[in-house]
Length: 187
Length: 182
Image (cartoon, rainbow over the protein chains, first blue to last red):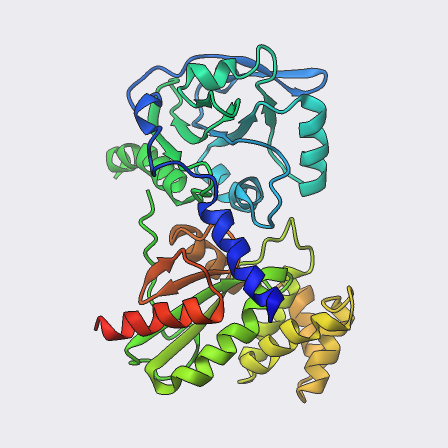
């Protein structure tokens, strides 16, 4: 029975471990209505991606603390599964952490991730800081989500306690909200 | 943001154990290839035994296909067996044969489990090839995403996500508490 006992507590620590007070860091996060600061980061050791390239389409920015989270069904793996739904809503997903491009390459390969992981590596955490999504104490990104519309404006942001996978529902709702006005006009 | 509320509630499309109008409902989103779900399986079974008619349990598919390459076919096989009234028998087989070795969810093993249950393995083979049950499994998956499922297993008690420990005593306590609150 001991392994069963461990299974429960593993799950517990995955969900609750290491988290500060719920939403405790949210106030510093860039808020809806703010222009999304542009950035250029490495997506592979020899390629870069700029936010401005995505003008005209919604973009999801998913900041997360680190590659190689030791659980199945971690946040990036979940988003990988939901990617077709994000794309149906016209959106591109960018994962961002302070891990280096080679680390991202290995992580992406191991999890078969089908979206870019960007390296906020040098100067470390600069983009995370611009979005109010950096944890100074640990030197890693917050678990923070942003939905940016086709005009480059933040329409939704959310900061999860760092130990809690925020799931994908909030992102999907925010993307649907982007589509709603257009649907109403055409109706 | 999701408030961790089950969407949709238990309905006629669900595979359930126990009376539909039981005072307590437990819904699990699971993946047959997930080791945590495999460890949760006997715990859930024990709880079903202990709570009897006071509990309605439903299982929904949440296969993490990129991480678990066999999870999708396993889920489709369970749904296929469900159409012959043998969902739970296949469900148990998929979790319990894990101890056989690393190939326990290979397609030929799924066909073997079908035979063991007295079902036609050639029909399962074509169902998998034609992706006959894929929409059903995807519909479960998306209901989980919209309900705030963020990994496997995720449990919902009386329609609300349960984020606590799912060892037998804790999960049982939470369920008994939910029953008493009614």
